Length: 559
Image 1 (cartoon, rainbow, N blue to C red):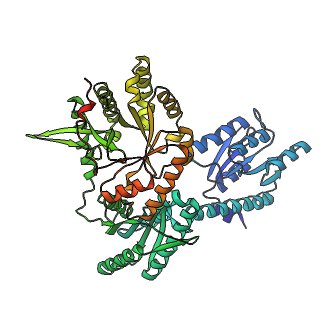
Image 2 (tube, rainbow, N blue to C red):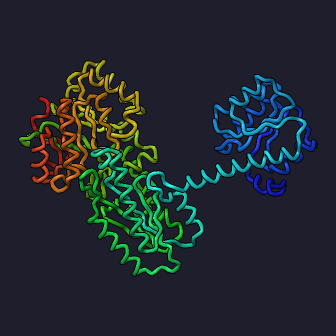
Image 3 (cartoon, one colour):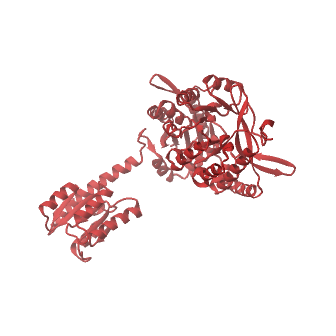
């Protein structure tokens, strides 16, 4: 291969060249600049290493090729390359030197360089060697590019490949499909089975796509996208095909290790739209929000509605904090005899419109409070009100706290203050429900907080247990007094075999550790009968009582 082909192949290759007192107008430097337009020149080993680190910091990648002398001031070529290999063990390197000692040759071999050119440089040998190195670099780049567009598990094209394809479209028609129950499958059967389910489901979708002339992508762990490749979209045909997919999915089961595993999906649809992927995700979110199997994006869909919604609630929260309209509501928790034994305190915002007073659930405003940095004020006020309520009643009350409450609001200080004031009565009737999230198991603050709280006599519960973040292992470390099983597992347990299997596993696990269980979202007798029969200790839900702004026991008031 000649120098012209080498120049064409080297156009996008980044090079760091280090030579002691190089001359810009030397033939060697001029030639390297012609071959490698993206070349960086440095005089010594220290400058070379600094340039190497800075290039990565700025571009997120390392130089494709480092060309260096061995005899460099401030830091030798060997030492510089040794440091570079720590950052990137696969760094391509070429050494140019007029001599090398035996020991240096040994070091060069151990570094695993790609080539060595003795001085004076022979132009033919130099071009031949550069040609080979450039070929290796380009081959590696092409392989990495191919891999970057492929999902490792299913070998389908991934999100990057989809976005690249959508960039070329003025308007696209796609379906986004989310496997809702994969987290529960992972938890019940393990990630290996979950991966088998995803691979089999991808094959199921791939077969469907081949029939319809569609292309399938896997864009997230449990999310697929179907892309309609037809140049002219037949809307009625697409609708028929979609309805067919719904029917097929409804009855599709995956057989793994002798078990028939079914699962739920939610879909978002976009037809002939620009920004199709973003709009499909909006449709998917709306489907989940409205508890529908699918939602179709349309031009009347208000894209800016979430922004307007956030602005509205930011102002409402601000006013509620200022006017002290953060109100705790109390929902009873009962035993197997349906006797009230304690309450959970739930946040509400009081809103007065004319003569009508409403109490708004946090489902409408909590996300906005977090986004607009108002959550701390809301949570602090709620904690204060619950502690005040405990001072004037004999009831036991539980309150939800998050990782943020423990770390940022200083809940630990509040508990320590209760201990210092010897308010052991309040401590013995307070239950802290820590919301189960991915942060909990990693947080040293949580461990310190739990230790102090338990010492004070406060009971600890893990809320929303059984969701995707649940970690049976760290329960052993926390050793809570209660586990509150997430409502998503309880509400349909009388009809859902997967939920039943998972709750049975939680019950068995908890009994062995002597941890009491509370079932949330018990909304009818059928659900209550099932969870009671499973051996769950306590129960909460609308079947026993809705949240109210007053405690239901007259006997809870202190005389």
